[in-house]
Image 1: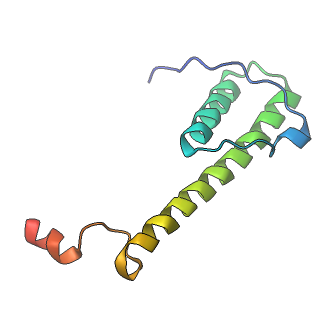
Image 2 (image 1 turned 30 degrees about the horizontal axis):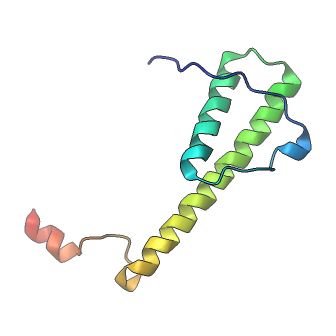
Amino acid sequence: MAKRNATPARARRPSEVNSELPATFEATVAELRTIVDALESQDADLEIAVAEYERGVALRRHAEAQLHAARLRVEELLPDGSTSLIDDEEEDEDA
């Protein structure tokens, strides 16, 4: 698997870990990938690595919350709390 070129992670103060979370799921995942790449490169000192790890944990939780909110929005649109856009009966007929 080819390694992505990561932008060097910048040091974060503890107060910055949960601040300014990305507005979109895609931006959250992109920042999380950058942090993972930086941590895998092992170029950062311990303090920076721990701060980036903390930020990564906050981003993972934020992404999970974004996915949960999206799922709730979809469930509101579908009958009976279903999460499928196709009725199970229609799906069986197509098979």
